Image (cartoon, rainbow, N blue to C red; front, side, top):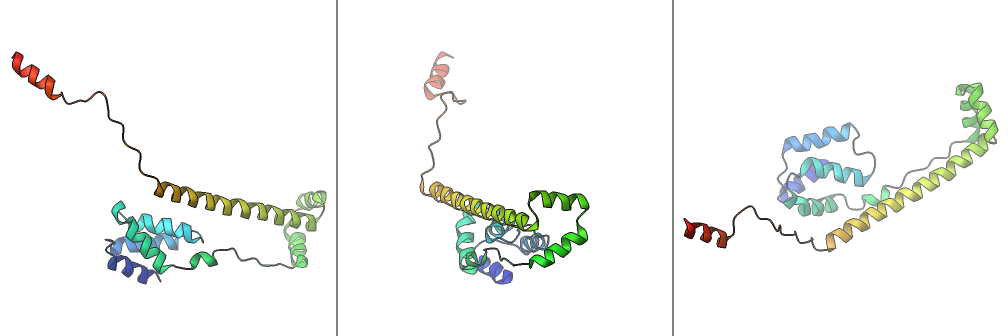
Length: 168
């Protein structure tokens, strides 16, 4: 998949080198992009695009090569049997940790609290991603602000130059 991505970028006119491609693979090997498509997108863009004029080409190729991957980024959940967790708790937890769990209400109550916190975290992170995407879309659609002109110019005006020449 990554070789096809590299070739598509070259075909689209993005000047990527083999060294940049190998740098991307090295970063992937070190797990710098995590497991989300968005993280991989920014890592690949950083490693492969050296000129902002090529960002649109990169975006088109990325969307073409990796289309549909957003659909599989939802985390997979696994149900671990409670008896396994209890046996692990008995084996690895200290007596103090066991007392803390009992003070909370037992292992079942601790697992329920964990599920609630995971739900909150998932909701917050998905809304944060949606917010950042809407900000990016808003920025792209608005025109760039005009740069203010400086009232104090370092170059002398034409009138001042003419006056200086006529008085000499």
